[in-house]
Amino acid sequence: MRAAVLPPRWPVPSARPRRQPRWVSRVAATLLPLAVGCRPTSSRAARAPASPSVTRWLVLAPHPDDEVLIAGGVLARAASEGAPLRVVVMTNGDDDCVHDGLTRERESLDGLAQLGVDAGRVSFLGYPDGALARLGRAPLATRRRMGGRCVEGYSTYGAHGQGGAEYHLVRFGGHAKYTRGAVVSDLATLLAEFRPTDVVTTHPLDTHPDHAATYALLRAAIERLAFAPRVHRAMVHNGDCWPIGVAPREPCPALPALPADATPPLPGRLLGYAPRERRLVPPSCASSDVSRNAKVRAIGAHRSQTRGLATSYLFGFARRDEVFFPETLERRGRRWLRRGSAVDDAVAPATLALRSGEAQALDHAPPLVVDAELPRGATAVSLEGDQGG
Image (tube, rainbow, N blue to C red; front, side):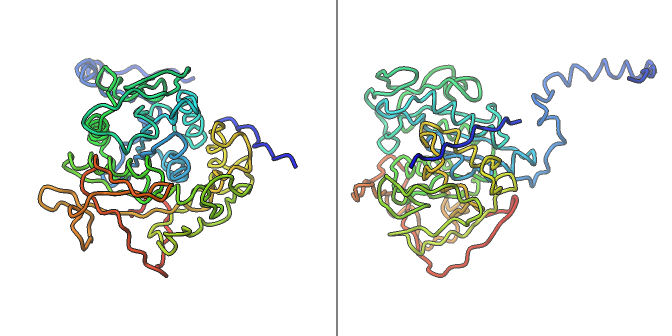
């Protein structure tokens, strides 16, 4: 039976002047030069300034597509409300030339446009796909990657998003070598510039090494700051087929999007690890008509990953809610540590469980404890809008 093809993307979609008194003209002539550097750069910037308590969302994704899988609803709601938001993508998803990194950048922008997020709010860092967990002090050796063509590369690259290039080139005028120091510095600079109140990223127990490393690198960047945002950790990989099945590897069950269903419990080793935060997606992402559902369309924009099929398991992330494991960090001495933690995060290095079942130490990471308590029967709360985690 031939698989159904995802429907095409929907398009994102005089009175006579009064004469002013002379004193008005003189005042305007005095004040105009002072206002030159303060003009809004977009129609969104022209809105009334946000109150100090407004939530400022930053979504940090390991690869193009993770941003819409874990936080499409969060982004759609923030964009519709005109809230400050940024999307940062760590790699271009181009490991060993399997996919074209520039194509994946474009897919990411196309997907975010379905949610109302414009390219000026997106930064691609261009660090090595499949190797974030191996970044250290010394630069990585050259790697096969594809950005238009398959080449050997050893530094960041990109051609889309804010500034039309990868973040390091736009911000500092040159490419960055593949080192831990470079990516942590880029993240710390981004955080200091945007000052998010809340960051959504992948969970340290995610079985994809890049996903676990992204969390560890974020924590390393926060150590350089005088403030710490709330962190909302999200799971993508717990076996290849969650959230539509428990198969450890692809091929996954062929199921359509399930926008009316809640996100299911985690299977296997994390069965009973209940998220403490469920955020309802906005109406634009809750429609049962998948051709009009913004999150379904956003996922569908990643054609290199869905293969253009409406039955891709990635559409299993289009649910009525998005679930997170939130944490609030607090100062203890010179470190930012998890509030309420009974164990000092500095007692053990972070480790991650690879898909092979082996454990790999994250030597590049700041000391962290990523072992999770598994509170069976815990009650998750439903959150709608910008409530704190």
